[in-house]
Figure 1: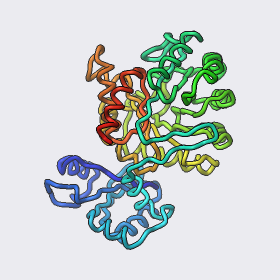
Figure 2: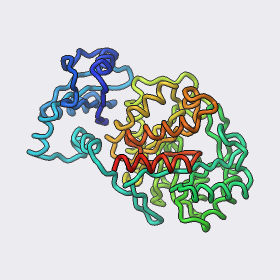
Figure 3: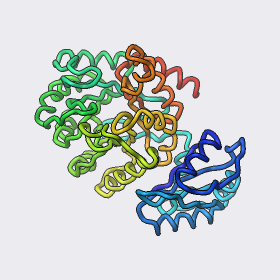
Figure 4: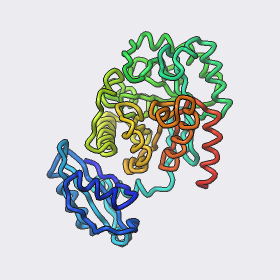
Length: 383
């Protein structure tokens, strides 16, 4: 079960969601909603959710059970003044009070660094991850960097442009893509990795769903695992626990071949949050440090046009989970739908900028130089 803060831009937006969940409006219409804190409890155990509702009421809030087909969901409403007075009067253990834990994570100004035996990620500024697809069929740059020399040159160039992390992948995960065998993936990425690792101080991540590929990459100096399947493979979880490498957990609905076949969510942010929580629990139980987990909501991976826009708009709600957030909007279809085929650079920069203002710590991009310039400006504005 998870607790997460829910942001509403207006009363009309809130009212529409309450109506969809079949709950009576918990508060009357008002122009200013900043003096209220809305949270959702979500889980598969109705008794556990009921106990958390009791804790919420003990904190001075009100709980309203929602009509949900998939799992038990409850809307919590607090007056901010009540929460402040409760927080100053006592504290609770986060492990038994996910409400307070989620609120603390959401309100946290600074994201703690990630440390491991090979490196460190500091989030005092926005980090830029450069994409290196060593594939013949990726949606944007398939085939451009399939050769070792071209790929190595591109990787070094992205570092020169300011990339903090280089993400190397040997399997296309575009919508409708067939899977790639681990052996083929290794043949594509390992020659580049072996030459690139001693040539740079930049961090390197391996973009793979296959634990065999991740194991070989880490053994040859790669720092991080970027798993678009969210570590659903138990051996990938074991590898992450054994090596202590940071892991990027991404949400994907199904697999690349089927993910865009009429994707549906009760609530896209809530459903993705539950997925993250489940994966984090399983990883933690296997020995993976939660201090080394990064969350990626997976724009374009089993999401409609509207879902992608909602995720960027409501990205800050994922902060309730307590992990750094990565967003990859670069050149994706929903960007082109708005900006047009020739406007994907500008559209990608706009999407990355919005994501940063809404809580993203890392942006994964094709156009490193332009993104780095935009990111520096945003970070300067944000102080």
